[in-house]
Length: 237
Image (cartoon, rainbow, N blue to C red; front, side, top):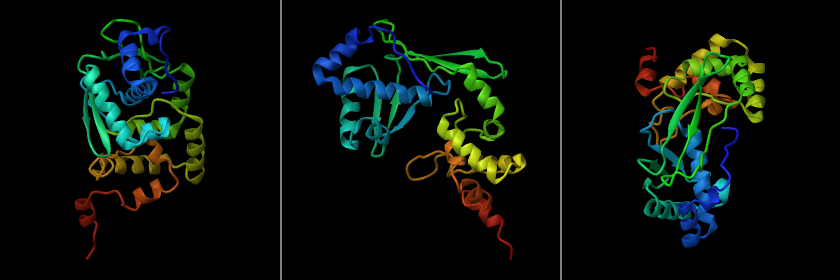
């Protein structure tokens, strides 16, 4: 998500005013960061439970893990939002407070671009939308590495935008090898890896940003992320 917008007057929403009056402005900022994180992770599933790591709040707001947990509990107590607080991350589900709708529109690539709308129950127009402009869609379609990822990543998150940082890493990786069959093999191995799909100590999942790190493709080809049962089959006696 490149940016998100809030309609004018959102600060006058009754629930926003209630939070600010009861807990101060920091919880409002925390709430907005939470909304943006949910928008980034939304994949079109209306029943999705979001996994949000506390590190996001620390990097954005300077909130410690303990402060993040306390603030999430406050939101859960005052808003119709379900929050399960765990040691390293929280699980967030919006049954009623947020009505998440996904609208698709065709872009020039023939792919669907998601637009996310959120509405408070008071029906003031406090909307957050994921905006994917035509320029971004064109960049995605023109990047063979992004195309390889989106076509082979299976349950791993697809790429919806390309930041300047991503462009830099893509250029670096492509300078190492432009063999797209090689990159497709790398992505398929990551997609097949239970470790890369969350079967690890903290529920981490591989993303496109993980793919374009300097050593990921080498480690993947060497079998570092392969499932243990697959590794045993490769042993030659």
